[in-house]
Image 1 (tube, helix red, strand yellow):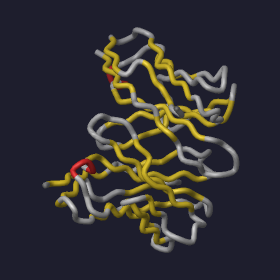
Image 2 (cartoon, chains in turn green, orange):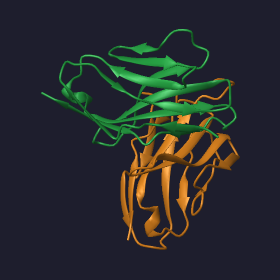
Image 3 (cartoon, chains in turn purple, green):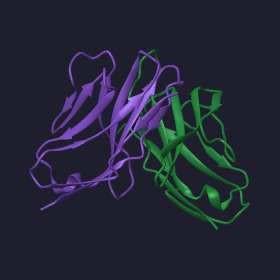
Image 4 (tube, chains in turn purple, cyan):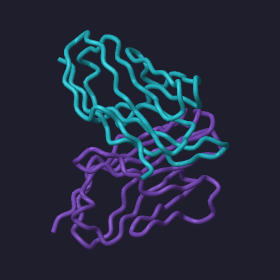
Length: 115
Length: 114
């Protein structure tokens, strides 16, 4: 069965510093996708970054990068140069073909960026 | 603008009064899905649809119904809402081929059942 684990309920970081949000996953399907979503206090779910299981390189989108370690089944999100607007909940999610493409979410990490 | 829309955004109702939350996407996506979000549990899938007239249960389908009569719309129906269905609901959609495309989410519907 698919499972996503986010062990950090909350993280603090100072503005302009980098922060890593942890995510580990479990699936028996060799083909899967890993996603990170941001949920600000307004509630919407904003897609940030995607990593495919067969991608050779780690995904990067602006200040977001995904540290993908397949053997360890981890997909950590790295936010560089944090900004006050990065304060939000962050969800790691996975999608595979055996699960009829549903997204399985972790419980989230709340990030607070301080001035 | 490509988007997923949900209505209403906020709803307060009473136990047993049937309600429908609408979801519509303008991206010609085949795959649509409903999730509920509860504190400490993340998002859990309620129902999904692979295409028109093709729907199936997700992880928490009890108390909900859906229909997919046309590609763009995927309403969520609560025939007899109960307080344990108080939650934040999201509709999502994505392309469906053999890939694992990103799901795009609607803005969410906050439901309170008294």
